[in-house]
Image (cartoon, rainbow, N blue to C red; front, side, top):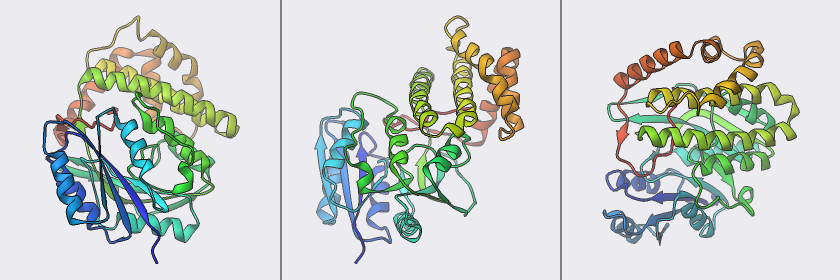
Amino acid sequence: MQKKISIITIIYKVEPYLPQCIESLINQTYENLEIILVVGMGGGDRCEDICDEYGKRDPRIKVIKSPPKGVADARNRGLLEVTGDFIGFVDGDDWASKDMFSYLYFLIEKNGGDIAVCGKYLEYVNGTDSSHERRVHVMTPEEAFEMILYQDGFFLHLWDKLFRKEIFDNIQFPVEERIEDRRIGYQLLGRAKKIIYGREPKIHFRVSEDSGSRVADNLVLSLEADKEMCAYIRKRFPNLKEAVDYFLVYETISVIQNNMLFGTYHKERDRKYIQYVKKHGSSVLKNRKVPRRIKGKVLLSMFSLRLLEIITKKRRKKSLEAFIPYSGLTLNKREEKV
C-alpha cells in the first residue's frame, strides 16, 4: 500500500487561482494523499466557500479555518493536522503538475532519501519559464548547502520539496516573522542524511510583482536570515567557507541593487552594505567557482556604483519586457533579484 503524503496548502485572498491549485492536488497520480487546506478567515472573497465545496467532494481534504495571522502561523496549524508519512507544501496561488508527488516520492524511495526536491516552472502573465534539465543529484547536507550557496539549483523554499515526517519533529515556524522558509529551511536540510534533487520541473510557481518598498524590506530580512544560516553552515561545514563568503556578498549586492532599482537607495544608510562588499569582495574574485558575470557585478559594487545602477535598471527593463509578473496577490513568496 502507498504511504500517505500530507500536503499543506496556505490560502488567503487567492480566489482567482484557488480552484486550479486544489484541482491540481486532487488529480495527482499519487492517490494516497491528505490535503490540508488552511484558509484565513475574513478575506473578503470566496476562498472559504471554495475550500468547503471541495471538502465535500473529496474525503481526503481537511479544511482548517483560522484568523489570518501570517504564513508561519498557518503552516504551524497545518502541521498539527498531519497524519501522513511525508509532508509537502503547495501555496494557494500555485499549482502542481499531476505527477509531482509521485515523482518526489519515487526520488525518496529509490534513493533512500529524507528530502526530495523538484524543479519549478516560473509562471508569468504572458508565459512560462523553466529549465529543461532532467538530472538527479543524490546529496549529503554539505553538498546540498554548497549547491544552495552557489545558487546552482534549488533554494530553501518549501513548495518544491517532500519531507519525511520525522524531519519536522519539534519544528515550528517562527510566528510574526516573514522569510519563514529561510529561517526553517536550512534546519530541515541539516537534519536530513540524504537529499535527492531532481531538476525536472513539477511545481508551477506564480511569479508576482510586489511594491518596491516591500521587496527592499524583504531583502533586508532575507539577508539577516542568510547570516543566521551561514553561521550554522560555517560551524558545521568549515570547508564551505568560500561558498559562504560568495553567498553573503551576492545577497548583499542584491540589497544594494534593489534599493537602486526602486529608488530607496541612500548613500549613508546603505554604506554598511557597500563596505561589506568591499571587505569581502576580493575573496569572491579569487573563487574559481564563481561565474565571470557575478565577478563583474562584484567589481562594479566595489568601484563603480553608478555603472552598477545603470546596468541593473537596463536588465530589469529587459526582464519585464520578456515576462509580466502577476500583481495584487496577498501571498508574495519570492524576493525578486536582479
